[in-house]
Image (cartoon, rainbow, N blue to C red; front, top):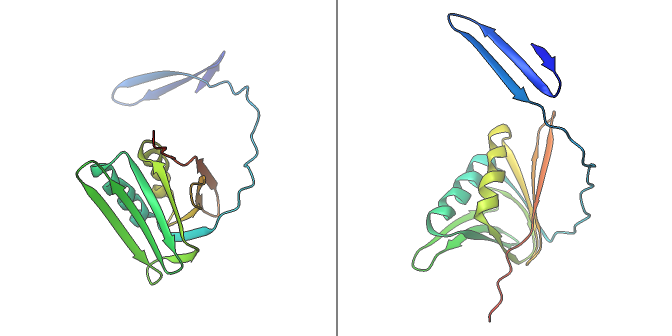
Amino acid sequence: MKREENTLKIEIQDKIKREFNLALIEIEGEEKELPILEFTSRIEMASADFAEAVEDCSVVADSCSFVSEPDKFMIQGKGSLNSFKSEFSSDEVNIQAQEATSKYSLEYLQKMIKATKIVDKTVINFSTDYPLKLEFNTPFIELNFILAPRVETED
């Protein structure tokens, strides 16, 4: 490997000689602190189940709603004619919640759930019409995403 001004050159010698020249990313921004948010619902569940429910929502809608009750958590999607609902009880997931409902864009959620591949458990924090915080933590990495709610107004 050789490094030339803002590029990384990688040569692989095998049956075929391969050469990659990759531009390095210059980071000029400053690190942002996470905002302090207060949530009424905290759900800890299997990452695979969470990812599957979000993907299932995308079949019928472009957004999904998270609904919590003290002993139940639901992920719902509703399109013009179709709908989807995945319901989890406190037997399947760890629920510390009050009643809350909030809707989020599936476009962004689908990108965020890619992190479920590196963790067994996902922590979902939300409140009614309030930002969502997804936590993907291992002993080696702490990855958090914050997503603004989709609030629809009637004209």
